Length: 145
Image (cartoon, rainbow, N blue to C red; front, side):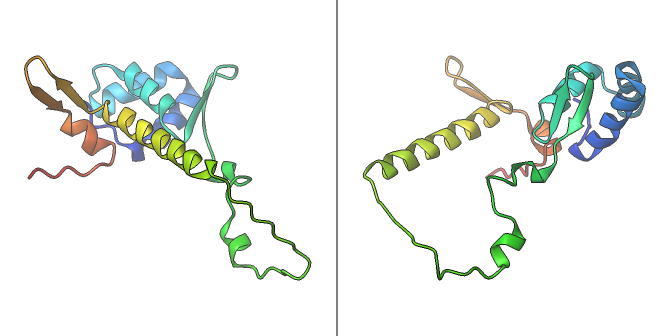
């Protein structure tokens, strides 16, 4: 297993974009001793915060403010607002609990999908395999009780 950390992704992406795929593969083999550098490039492409553009054949770094239209910024939260001319209409529906439950279910499904990268269950042999090195390299902390 390689020791390529997320903090190294930006440098690898920079080499990939400036010098090309072969240079990035050689960099991974020389500096990290990776046996399968293409898998690392694929993992970077699929990592949240990175986007591969097949037209330009480059990996773009998504800005954290790209979802600014959905969420309010700190400036917008802190500025005083005038509520003199604003009418608020609140309508509570029975389906709001259902919608919240659907959102919770989707969030849990995403978390379980994330865990399937690291944990494998074998019901036939009654074993659990955990890839501890991948968990640690992806920023998780592992505690064994």
